[in-house]
Structure formats: C-alpha cells, structure tokens
Length: 489
Image 1 (cartoon, helix red, strand yellow):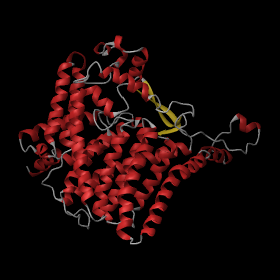
Image 2 (cartoon, rainbow, N blue to C red):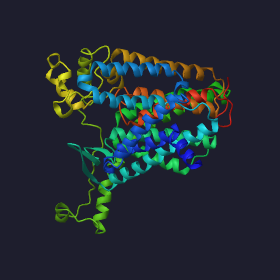
Image 3 (cartoon, rainbow, N blue to C red):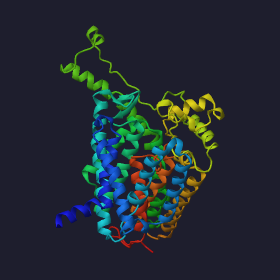
Image 4 (cartoon, one colour):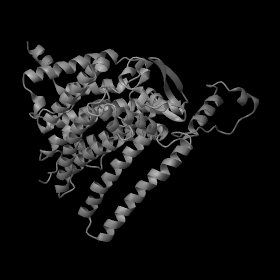
C-alpha cells in the first residue's frame, strides 16, 4: 500500500514529468538515436493528460500559477481555432492542443507548497538532465568533426545529415542550429547550477568548465546565426545589468569604474569578433591533420592522390554558415512573406496548424491558393510548417486573438521581472541568478525572431526551458534567500 502510494506520488509529480520529458525531447532531436524515444514520448503524451485531469478534479494546483487565467483563455482561443478549422486540422489541432496545455499546466506551474530547497534541488536536477545529455551529444559531435565522420540517417521520407556536412557541424543533431542553441542553454544552466551550489564565481566545477569548452567548440563549428544573436543579447544584458553595476558598487573612483567597464567590453567584442574567427581558422585544419596522421601510422588507407606523391600540405575545410553571396536570412524572408499572406486569409483565429502541405495534398484545400503566388506555395511546402519566427507562427496558428492573448501573458511577466530587478540596490549572488534567468528569457524571445521554439512547436527543448524558467522567476522573486545573500526588498 505504501509503495503504491509512493509510485502514485512520483507519477503525479510535475518535476518528475519535466525531467523525463526533457530528456526524451533532447533525444528526439538526435536522429542517430533511431527513434528510441518514440514510444516513451507517446507514454509522456498520455501521462501529461492524466496529470492535468487528476489535478483539475482534485487539488487544482495548476490554477495557482502566475497569470493562469490568461493561459486558460489562450487554451479556449485555440479550441475555437480547432472548431473553426475542424474539416482540415481536427486531428493535428487536438494533438497540438494536448502539447499546448501540457506546457501551460505541467511545465509552467511550480508547486507553491515546496520549500526553497526543494525548488532549487528540482531546478538543478532539471538543469543537469540537459547539461549531461547535451555534453555527451556535443562531445560526440566534436569528435565526429575531428575524425571527419559523416553519414545519413533515414527519417520518414528524407535523410538526416549527421557529422560535418555542407561546411557546418550537424553532429548527432537534426541541425546545427538545434545543437548550437542546446549548447548555449547548457552553458547558461551550468553557470546557474554552479552559482547555486557554490555561491561564488571563483570556484567552478570541472565538469561544467569542460561542458563550456565542448559547447563553445560546437557553436563555432555549427555557424548558427540565431544562436550567435542569442548569445550577444544575453551577454550584453549581463554586462550592462550585472558587471557594470557590480563595478559601480565595488569601486569608488569613477576612473577605475570606467577603465574596468571599457576593458570588459573590449574583451567581449574582441573575443566575439576576433578570437572566434582565429579559432575557426585553426579548427579548419584539424580534420586534415588527423587524417594525415592516421594515414602515416597505417590506420587509414592512403588515397590515390596520396599514393602518387608525398603530400605534406594539410587539407583545409570550409567552416561557414552559407556562401558569402547567400541571402542574409537564409530563405526566411520568403517564408515569412508567404506566412503573412496566409494570415490575411485567417486573421482572427488562424489556421490551427501551419503545415498545409503534409504529403503534398492532404491539407492544401484549407487555404485559397489563388491568393498566393507560386513562390508563396513553394515556400510553404519548403517550410514544413516551421515559419522560423515564433511571432508569425503564433499568428498563423491562432490568429490575432491567440497572438494578443499570449503576448499579454509574456509582457506581464517581463514587466514584473524588470521592475523587480530595477528595485534591487545590491548586486548579490541572488540578484545575479535571477538576472541571468531573466536575461535567458529575453534572449530566447529575441532568438525566436528567426526561429520558432517557445510555443506551438511540439517536443521542443527550448520551449520546456523557457516555460519552466518563467515560473522559477515567479517563485524566486517572492523568496528572500536563494544562496546566501539576501535580496533587497
């Protein structure tokens, strides 16, 4: 009886669901796993429904989270969208709806009855699930680059590229952009875990340092512009609202404050613009050097060209996002234009799902193609439902009503956190933890100008982190103590 009660409590625990679901979603973005997560994710699908249903009819903890009523309204708006588009998107709409409410009422809420220590413990464990998984995936990916390993994995009707392909490192991920943003998340979460555990910047766990090195290498080799934008926003906000105020608080002389501030900014831009380029240039010779060394010791078979002459020059590979004359948005502008033309046809409640050409013929009757150009139609087919902009994606799938509802929810959170941080008088460790969590949220909102993660993208790791951290911010703002420093009220 006691064991069955423990199992029941474990199964109905939001934190346990988050950690299991996060891990499975991470594996979901790794084609080399050969879909081992497929059936466990289906279990999570029904597990989430069960948790929501039981909580609704018992404790109703989901209705104690910040601004929960706006999320209820958003859920109702999306149900209306499903009802309006039922002839074309009923199945996909229900599928999307389950993932939407799972995000709203399991990923987002935190049990307010938990102590601060319990919340911190669950947070650091959640972070470690991502950090350890991404570290292993990142390390394997970097080794694939070093040893020049690449191959294709069949997925559905296409082939997923793995390894270093088309001048970018895919590694074991579905795309370089995914691997890079996961790496960025793991670095930020490593820093937060270390601060919570040690309460200082001077002692850093060796594993977390190793993870930062691996993810930095992956980022350089992936050449992800979206992640680069995310890093820039997060770093600049941290410099302006943590580093500079800390200098002002610590040093009395204005000249010393100005000198240190300028030095930090010069270092930041120097690393961003100069050092990264130098490192990328050096890395471009690594696979050639390794292959040459393996050939010399007899592990690799020499190529015909190497047999013909003693080849001393090391082959250099190209590491770049796209050719220099390529379009700046990597084809996103035309997708956005096509999406806007669809929004004009469904302005109020959207289309429920953004994949109109599944199997090329199944859903195209939903939209009036006579109001679209041939380019629009081709771009919608190419996008496979991913508009590469969460704001456009939200308008497409839930219309102006859905967009306005979720925008109000996000703006209220931003307002609460900004006011809270501006009121703080001391740059304590507590302040730094909350500030970095907030800056992570802001950086992801900016990143989603060129990607679509935080809503209406099922099984999305970035979305899980985003919504969980929104709730963590709500919780920590009400606490007087996180590590060992008191947050000024």
